[in-house]
Amino acid sequence: MIRIGAQRIPPSTLLLLFLDAISVAFGLLVAIVLRLRDHQSILHYLSGPHIVARFALVVLVFGVALYYSDLYDRPEFSRRIEVFMGLLQALGSACLVLAIIYYLDEDVSLGRGIAAMSGPTIFALMLLSRIILGRTDFLLYGPKRVLVVGTGSTGISAVREIIARPELNLKVEGFLDEKGENIGQPLVNPGIIGGAQEVETIALGRQIDRIIISLKERRGNMPVSQLLHLKFAGVSVEDAHSFIERVTGRIHLEHLSPSWLILSDGFRKSPFLYAVKRTFDIIVGLIALVLTLPITILVAVAIWLETGSPILFRQERTGLRGRPFKIMKFRSMRQDAEEGGPVWAALDDNRITRVGRFIRKFRLDELPQIFNVLQGDMSLVGPRPERPHFCELLEQNIPYFALRCAVRPGITGWAQVKYQYGASVEESKTKLEYDFFYIKHMSLVLDLAILFETAKVMIYGRGAK
Image 1 (tube, rainbow, N blue to C red):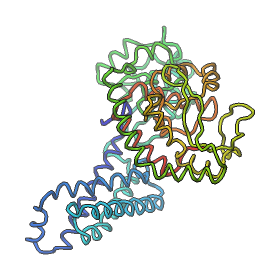
Image 2 (image 1 turned 30 degrees about the vertical axis):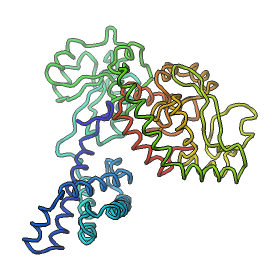
Image 3 (image 1 turned 180 degrees about the vertical axis):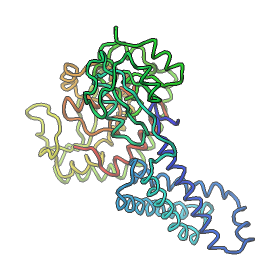
Image 4 (image 1 turned 60 degrees about the vertical axis):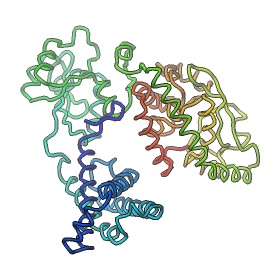
């Protein structure tokens, strides 16, 4: 299965990607046949120069448009109006982008007539595939059966994730209690169906495909011999923390032991990876500096017209290995915003100016941090840098919080694209779980995926406060 970091892309999403590519290709072929009609003309057109590359360009543009319209995020398609409008939006966006590309380079164009005629067919096929998949189990085979050994909170969280994510194609058969004393008691859905020492009998009897370990106390309760037999019989066995990490893209901190972090794969990064990441930061940072210059000037003028100077806001943040540095941002609050001391931003914060509200929504206030990246204080991608005041508070309330400083902080990060703005201790804990996932699986591929997703967050203005 394809992964980003350690998070696997569900087979259902891959199936939909494949069907969409087929829909675009088939729609183009139908348009070519209807446009040219003559058999010889059709064959001559399809044997033309770079025809495969021109088809691939259309498939790629449509795929990106569908992604940015959130049409791969939903595992079910029961809301047909929402799907219909999303497809219309994606089709319009793709056609606009292709028109610009064809204007810049006519050699890659398939022809205006073919492009126009293919649209209805592509739209109809994509809508039909989503309606059909919405009425089925989304896959061509039944769900995998899951058994949870233990009643720990992490296992309960894992089951909640399974219930909330039908695209995983998993069915929880039940929990096994550590002592076998609470059989029949409901936990999430379903409840306790037996004791941990019955795991082999229950797993074989119910044809279990996957076992998740979530024992409150493993010493004396782990049925090691039975689990080994099941493992060698082909049943997948994994820890609840590892399962949650794989399906959610976060490392669950609840009851997480230091030994799990020490023995877990990942976290160790080679000097070569750091060198590649730093080179990538400098090159992309310089390109971004040039491309965003017009927006930067407009934002600076808007701030100056509304509230005067200073336009930039410098604030101390905690960086790599706990070293402090001055972060640069466009000022989005009143100049007296923190006369009473540092506080977290909140929804409808009355300290935020009108221009500030707009630039925060679309993350434009972060643009000056490109200079922090070029100076080496930050990276394009990494955990967001916290203020020293909040770092001290969070280190006292959240275990392992200081470990997030093991890598350079970033302008954007895994937590920023997967979660909302953190404005409390509990929200900061959840963000830390995403940050740990990033630190564990840090790679250039993951960085590119985060930057790609960040563009969508900025376009729709999600998660800002």
